[in-house]
Image 1: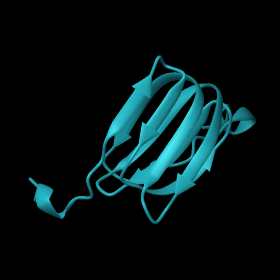
Image 2: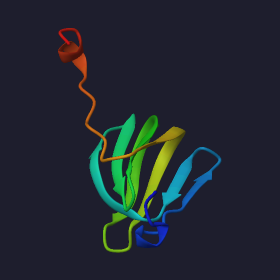
Image 3: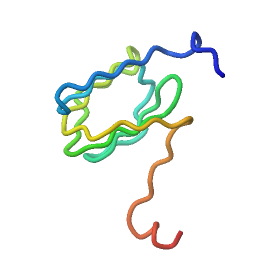
Image 4: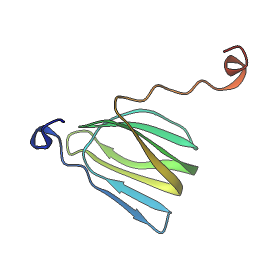
Length: 92
């Protein structure tokens, strides 16, 4: 098990599923109105929803604020790989 003292503090606050505030965000790797892929100090994560919009991201402070309908947050052990969309999935 990893030493938790080496990880960057990470907090998540969701307000009425309409706004998400997150700390400890190192990078936003990709985004669109349905999904935002981020990297925290410990792992990657996917924020999924509808009409998502990044209101603020500050890489120095690690602050991320997202507006829209928040459907879920999913964590990965490593940085998430961008999902392939469209015809590429047919030929897998």
